[in-house]
Amino acid sequence: MTEREPSASAADQLPRPDGEPIVRLAGVVRVHGEGPHAVPALRGVSLDVRAGELVAVMGPSGSGKSTLLNLAGGLDRPTEGSVLLEGRELRDLPPKRLAELRRRSAGYVFQDLNLIPSLTVAENVALPRELDGASTATARRAALRVLDEVGLADMGDRFPDDLSGGQRQRAAIARALVGERRLLLADEPTGALDTRAGDEIIQVLRQRADARAAVLLVTHEPRYAAWADRVVFLRDGRITDSSDAQGTDGAGGMGVVSAR
Ligand code: ADP
Ligand code: MG
Figure (cartoon, rainbow, N blue to C red):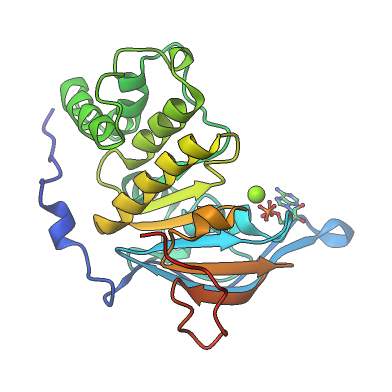
């Protein structure tokens, strides 16, 4: 099987932060359900995330954070408005092309890890590449590279159950990173972890943003949001406030101090 390896310098070819957004939401409305049971989860959200940016999304439970992430990654479709992933309007893509773009461009980390217990860590991480048509050997090489990146170089041949909670979460992040995806979506990835393990996760996300990915991170913890370039606050399906880490936007700053 022929296979185009992502080049080591792929990151160099990504747009600069002032370039095209990796993901753009424009006037996005998402209503779940219909009729009397309709729930407006997002009520007109616009957001750009560029290469090199880590954007934290905060807000109370039910404010639409997960809905926003699912839309950004093409897992869900907006009721109104548009979502562009790497410049492509997702609405215009036939389902097969959408699935392909999603697989190549976006990686997800959820609190519920979904690592497959009967596969080794390396096999779990290699799986998305294999699903994308890579040979087993190529997918394994890509998996080992990214496991090294998240500090799990020696854990590839273990099974998920043999890892600590923090290590399992890093394995899930490795699986989301494999294949040089440019958009990383992390929905409360530190939720169940102690502080030290949580810090390791955030550092991996930060490194990935610094390596020219776009990262959207849902978190409840100011401690983790402090690593972000921007913090976006959602309430009742609207962005109520947005701040860069220095508080230099017009929103009055949120007192978020960069941890870097
Ligand atoms: P958050 O992640 O901030 O807790 P969600 O995006 O999960 O918020 O949910 C936003 C709102 O949409 C909530 O009122 C939730 O109950 C509702 N909701 C989310 N997903 C669905 C769904 N599949 N069907 C119906 N309502 C949903
Ligand atoms: Mg949620």
